[in-house]
Length: 262
Length: 262
DNA sequence: CGTTGCGTTGAATAAGGTCAAATAGAGTGG
DNA sequence: CCACTCTATTTGACCTTATTCAACGCAACG
Image: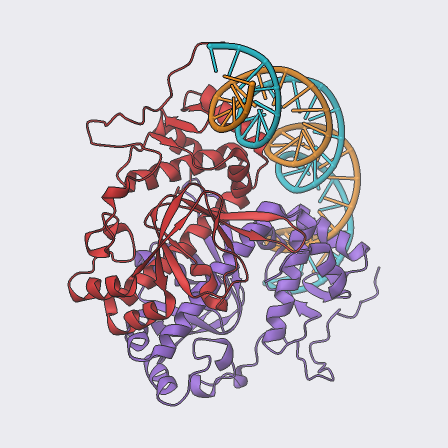
């Protein structure tokens, strides 16, 4: 075939609701200060104001670029900082002694990397950028001090950690109890919700990760992932073109899943 | 056969190393105050002393008995307290809308129940006692205050939460990448280590949970669990009699697993 | 001594994995 | 613009593992 097909998602289009679907969060939208960052209400500073947020801004003075495929940190390194994603996306993964890998999560802007290493003062996972990305460097010792000084910062941090626990429990449920089809559907709905929370379209998005990464995360082989994409498409629930995904029938997907998505 | 076989584990025996294998933690060994509790260094008060531990003792003034099969709390309930296990053991599980269950963990003395609910101010899981048990009730608001006032209490709490994240990631790895046999071996090694940390034998212990619960936790059916017990026993790695387990070759089990156990 | 709950075992089946080959794009250099 | 390469993805045929269904054994208990 020589017909150049139109992309499933037009990245220049802006919908009625002002949704955007660029492959990266537009840089100009993310200020270099928490106080004016558009991710403020999704990130560490949720609900903070005045002195609190100024102190946080004061502590988080470094930004760091990580290019596609590079590590933000690797397992075994001493944990000095946590990282908030300003821009881009990451995968976090665990490695076994015998070389197997398990991706434990994909992180989007506003999410925090490194929480799992606090208990051992060392990072236990690798964090690899799925695209050129940018991080806010949060010196952990400073964060502890702030949590000490400002009750709300401490509270936020506890909620954040607890949600991380909850998210991981949901994945345990997915891995332990769901069929391949349900896993993929759950995964897509979860991504949809998270992009929507960031102000992007909930139906149309671009997968930042390969089929292999998806499979690894969902406890499946890439071939199975590919087949399940096909199956969901055949049922008219989604449309897929390479890494571009359109959810045609989110309710249908939810019905198929029969479980909580987040 | 009419021969009454001797139990695999003699619960009255005390080994050279002073190991004990009673079915329950002996009550007299657990004081009603953190300061003198023998679980102190495994529980919330790790490393605390003086004023810190006194404040904690002051906050944790209630104890609660939960009999076998009863809930410490259920999903959906408002989170007012966390619970430290003084005595006994629990299973925590998540339920889907369509009635499936996933056990997310088994908790032993010194471990904390309820951390996953902090992010939503509600319990997300059910915590059910596997045997008659006893809890220390930790009012969450008080704990927040203490974390505020005493840096080390805050730090301890963060480490605790982070370890919970880490543990769950390890289970994700187990569910996503391991065969049935590896899952069971990993499970047994993990229990072994945890009992050992509590001062009990690392080779001999009594499973507090049914085959079905084990299967649910490991993402397997109870029949598969049973078969895998048989397989490990055939290989001479373990000895099983009902719920009594003896690890005959821990190194063999570790070799089989090829992954971190905790 | 029968009932009941839990655990084991066997045979058939299904879901997903494995292996291999085909296809599609993206990127490169002519 | 085209040929070429490299990688990611899809698809098909076959195989392995764990599940399902069913029967049976065992121990505890009224």
